[in-house]
Amino acid sequence: MGKRIVVAITGASGSVYAKRFLAKLKCTSTPIENCSVVFSKNALDIWAYELKERFEADSFPFKVFDPHDFYAPFASGSAGYDTMVIIPCSMGTLGRIASGVSDDLITRAADVMLKERGKLIVVPRETPYNLIHLRNMVTLTEAGAIVMPASPSFYSLPMNIDDLVDTVVNRVLDLAGIVNDGYKWGEV
Image (cartoon, rainbow, N blue to C red; front, side, top):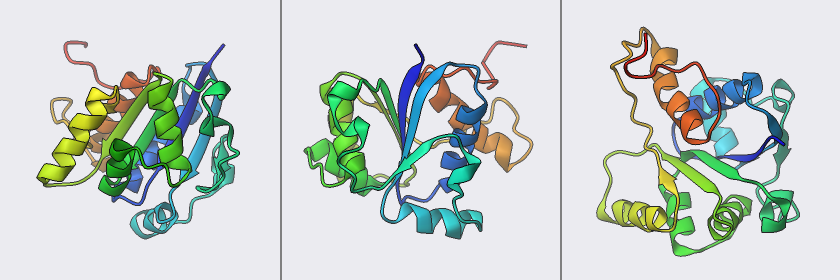
């Protein structure tokens, strides 16, 4: 049986991370039984602005859900999804999850992931952090989530923007248990 994963994309800057993540999920050798995608209200606009293209659902073999579709399978723990990645994760979304506010499909699915003890990975793309951001990240960490800031690494000697973006995306894939070709420290 393969992984059952939800990918949520919010209106935070950093759509390139989401695009690369979806592209790598599409090509992974890790068995994926189901991958569902949901965009927040503003995410599609940010995607178009930052990437200079509209999101084309046909480019990916994943089902895309409306952010207000509470009948989506992953809105309930009985559906058995094991991983949720919010990439990028806005601080508003992070704060609502930390506060237990389930006002859309993304926050509801994150709440479900936490209550079912699944893997919730949030990828905030914000800087600097204020005290509220930090406290919300602590709250999510204490609740079992993984906070993985979109902070690129340089020890792999990235040669271009795609290489730099991949230092974050590959780390998120690792955390989600998805096989990828990312740089591993100490490997040749």
